[in-house]
Image (cartoon, rainbow, N blue to C red):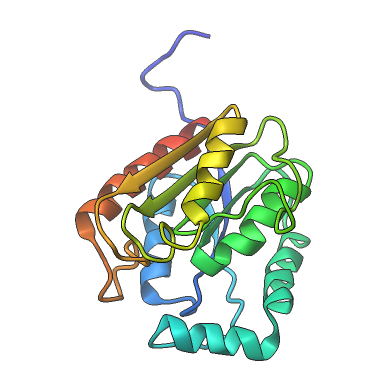
Length: 203
């Protein structure tokens, strides 16, 4: 079909999971930017209103509840939504997002920010499903993303999955796209947001 400049781009519906500090104003702002581009974004609060001033305190809270339980809270959210979603997650939120993208039928895509799980070995949810596009974003010197093996998992996905992209940004911050936190990087976030919107416009 030939391109026509007035033809509306396809709208995506995104299920976006927050990071370990909770559903912060920065996560909400990022979702609003995606909505402003014409897409639907759901932002469930897996912490039931709580936010935390540091990653360590957020992870301690998750540990009290149980990592599997918090992840499954996210998975259960999808039961209330139609298939055909793009699943997105920031850091800890990648756990439910990637599980849903790999195991819930009908996924249109996945957006994995600051974290990535392998698709082989004991930590894997299984192979990546055919036809599900994925973007992975992280900083090249982030001690968590680059230093704890997530970048290797991302490279495995890019190597094995037909429609997979890994984008690395210069810097050492983890939550760099959350404008409510000191780790925010405006330039990197602007480029990330542009890439995400282009992805959503085509999946």
